Image (cartoon, rainbow, N blue to C red; front, side, top):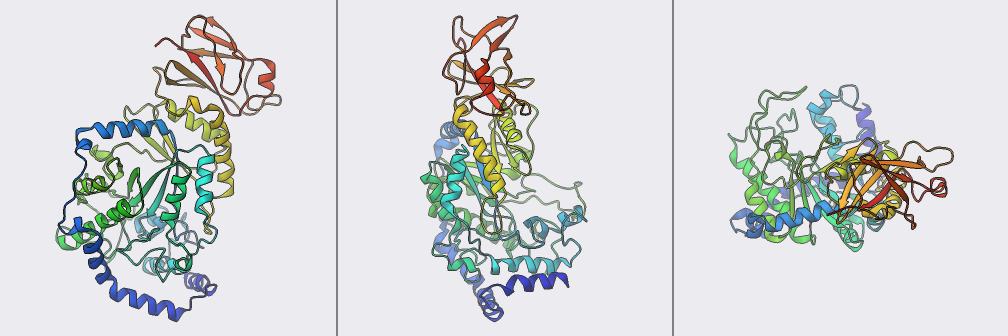
Length: 505
């Protein structure tokens, strides 16, 4: 009963009447199949037999090596996942997955509703979706001011709602069923990508392998007990091939109609390249089939249009897929360097500016990148508390940029509260300050001991943000740097302090 009252309250405040919505919905249902196949033929020739050629230089490794060097120079990116969820009891697309609800019994609002009614209510959120405060230029400025170098946006989450003007589905932000279609420029992704490029940011498109709204993934009128396809694809290969072609077609749209794309960040491929038999979780059916998304064909097609594209096939990470160009540990910072390019995805949550900056420094010292995900309000604004913390990170990075961007791992990446990076003939020792003290902005002491670094004899050591060199002396196998009292009293930044030390090559 609460669910239906909630649905009614959602629709009552909109100008679209129920009768108009129902008629539009019925019309779109009738032509969905026609749209899919015609669009696939018109805009996705690769999916119906016309081949495209991938980059041979990528196969030889030359371009990929250069692109991954570029990626490792960036160090800091912003990731935004935003869609129709966020209204009332709906806070995440994951609530559509029964296995997720079962595993979080008592934690997810609405878990005990009838799952079919619950899902229908969720799908209908598209009919009231109007993020009226979204400003693409503001999002791009926030990202730039934070010091991030690349921006990845979720063009379609697992729920299947498209945040771009796909021609292969009517379940999208530009659909007549969605109020946001009345906006002068409703193609959310196009506006955001353009704004980011104008600010000098690289652009990444995140797209889910899974699509719970697609009839080729979750078969209509059949139970969908978990996040996987809800039918035996080995017994219905034609249906599965339609989904694969649909997925390839959407990637082709993103590669051909949205300008330069630097990173294709593919998510939601839980069973790609490995067998889940024996890994049944709470509420899950036993899914033993490996999803074949025909990745060789897809990546060749994508790079035929975007020759310098970096691909992140997250579903293949456990098996070391050749299309997993860099690793993406989620909500986890590895204890040790991974020995290959990597990026930690991290939701900002309640982490303080100091915690986030210390995390960034720790990750960079281990050879990784930080991809930070701020919260977004239902109205389409980046959460103000996230903006404030991002702004502080940007202020710090403007002073300490030399110690972060374009650096690589030093032979010793960390010792206690000192992290190390290197670039050219310099090592940067980044001292992680403690909690703010009464006479210090963020705990910069009068003396700092740096181990494992041997400066060039007679060279000068600088604290980034301070013009005058600092006094230092050798103490055994370490060096002691003296910080003048005016600097400790009024440090150039907060939370962490970067010392530039010239070393022998």
